Amino acid sequence: MLNTPTRGTPATAQEAPALLGLTKVPSGIPGFDDITEGGLPRGRTSLVCGAAGCGKTLFGMQFLVRGALDHDEPGVFIAFEETEQDLVQNVASLGFDLNALVDAGKLAMDHIRVERNEIEENGEYNLEGLFLRLELAIQSVGAKRVVIDTLETLFGGLDNYAILRSELRRLFQWLKDRGVSAVITAERGEGTLTRHGLEEYVSDCVILLDHRVSEQISTRRLRVVKYRGTTHGTNEYPFLIDEAGITVMPITAAGLHHDVSDERVSSGVPRLDTMLGGEGYYRGSTVLVSGTAGAGKSSLAAHFADATCARGERCIYFAFEESPQQIKRNMRSIGVDLGAHEQAGLLRFVAARPTMHGLETHLAVMHKQIRDFQPTAVVVDPVGNLIAAANQEEAHLMVVRLVDFLKLHGITSVMTSLTSGGAAAEATEIAISSIVDTWLLVKSIEASGERNRGLYILKSRGMAHSHQVREFVITSEGIDLVDVYIGAEGVLTGSARVQQENRERAAAVRRAQEIERKQRELERQRHAMEHQIAALRAEFEAQEAEMARIIEQEQAVEEQLLQDRSGIASRRGADTSD
Image (tube, rainbow, N blue to C red; front, side, top):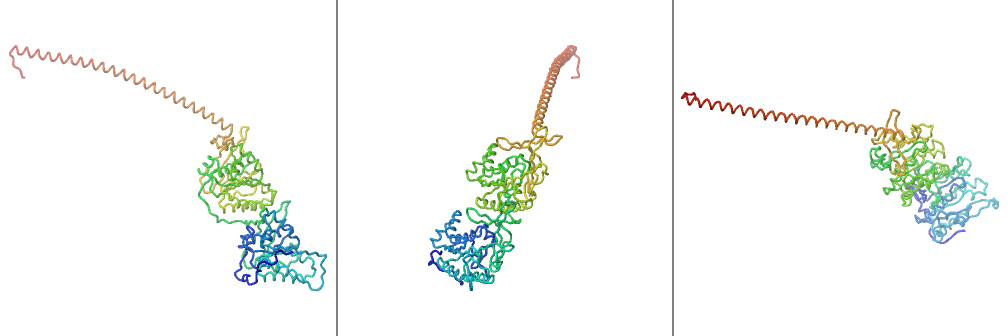
């Protein structure tokens, strides 16, 4: 049944783009236009094919709804399987109000019922009836976009392949002559893109939707198989169907052309920042924290998230092992209140088991969350668990693409990775050590009947960093790196370190006491010497005074003798030489 059949002006062949200089119409599907460098071909027909349940009908409906709402391009939806009411109900959960669009004259829907057992092939078969209904619907709203869903139902009653081939070509040409941008959906055949094996040859653009299940894990992928007159991405791209409709993730390796920053951001552990050249990680870099179970990987990641939010920046915590509530509770016990940051809108948790989706879907979800939340930092805890959703090589490639995406957007990331007890410490399960910028290795150190935690920086590109193995303790106030003690058997930790500290303190006390004793002895000797000097000086002064008195007496006697001789000579009248 057609709706509002009298309104609008149909698109005409004169509005169709010239063959040279192909123009494109925005698809309304986030990410898809990035792959196709603009969208679907304007004024031409695109074929969307795939197996049942892969999202073909939703692709077409989203193309119409977004065109009507965002680009003022009315559309027509011709359905052969679902009624108008079914379509309205099916897409209502996605926020698409089809009735409102119909009432506004921006959308026309028509359900054409085709039953194979009611079809009798007699004489020449053609699609004139369909063309009449399409023409009427296009004119009713002035449609620029048309969706026909699906070809299999339309041609399901025909066994004559020659007629089918002829009418199929005529349908595509009819749409092209009207200058409308059309999407036709088709079921995938056995070993072919479509059941009839013809549609893909007469279409200007062919899009393949795939919903594959491997080991009970599903993944949706999209591929542009063909696009005449333009370049386009040729890889398989993951896509999501969620409450906002279809979102394609144009995620491939982003290359090595991203910008870098000299700015540093704190790790959340001050003494670890000191080990990292005194300032922490480079902004936009990728940090790997690997180690055995219980070594403190998640705690280090939580400190980084806490420091990020404390600066007023946003952070997403992708959790693949624990629930958000469990993480927040555990971190509160060590003085890191992630819940407060979440309430403040600075921290978002995205938690899922690795086996919940395929790797491509996980990557697509992470991509979408990052685009929505716009964080400056991301935590992936633990990244190694993604291997549960695929094999090692696939997990490695997925993480490489994630790292490229994060670097491209200047997002600092901390990823944790579990190292199995028997595995080499300086290795990860998904072999990503070569693509990270900073690698922290935490490990358990067993000595003297106890187990303690050690941390060292295996590498940190672009900075002078500490090469010491540091013991760290996790207290109710967070992570604290303690001083290093290296004994004959290596780094001393735990009780051995405490005993060493006690021994060194006792030795220091003994040395201080010995120094004090020697200082007292030196003082005593100095006092004795000064006393002796004073006694000698006094004795000398006494002798000096005595000698002066004697000399004075001698001089007085001599002077008296001279006076006596002079008196005697005077009395005798003797002459003198004076």
